[in-house]
Image 1 (tube, one colour):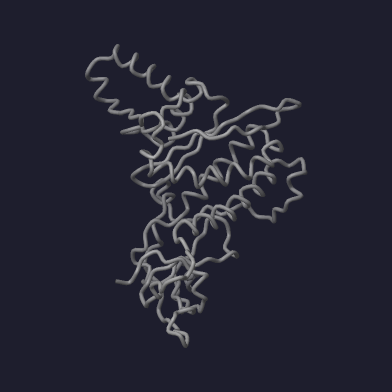
Image 2 (cartoon, rainbow, N blue to C red; image 1 turned 180 degrees about the vertical axis):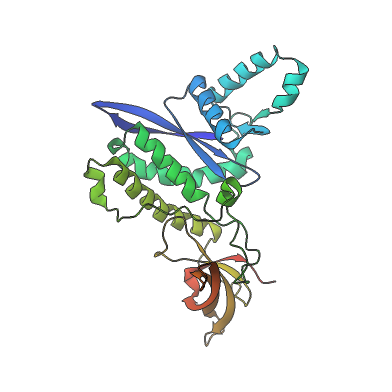
Length: 305
């Protein structure tokens, strides 16, 4: 877990600071974001209890040595001394802190947090003053749903009748449906309207557009082509970059055919994707669809060999 911010919100005529607290699960790769009014230990403990009340018990907490984390850990240790062994066994939670000035030791979650925090900060630096505390909390939850919609696996992707790729949302909600945005078109002018929910949805769309681009670029670093690179091959699993997809939806595909150029380099692919549809009985089925796309519109997730 880690904190980020501050963000400035408007409450009446007042301008107040707010912070975000981001949890990331090292098992399911899911994230959870809570809103903090300040960086005190009290605010952190309340946010932690909110997280546990929603998501369930935690086996281990890992963080850096932020002052609010250190203060909360001290309070927990003092309370533990007054408990009997049976109560301690029921809690079963460990609090591990990295050494000071050693953020690299939290590489797994620091990398995840940075991809989210950088986009959130750049958007809210210009727009957070048009939100109040309630709207900012809703926006952070929308961001949480976007991040937890990313695919984690490519198992059975080549089977049109197989299940959808696993996402953190599947693990958290035990539902296969995608959390789609509300109906309507949200434009920049919504930031200046009195309907705050439209402001939140416009900013959520902005986060989806920018975070998706940065996330895909992180999956596949593209250097200058000074030396030959591996060509795409049949049965590679790729992620298709499609700007027309609605929020929280991703397209994974399997390479079924490659088209070599005169110099032997693959620049065009034939892809197999599963397109959800309804049969005659109204049941949801996936039908195979073949598309031709350029190589730069795909990101290789799993190589054939």
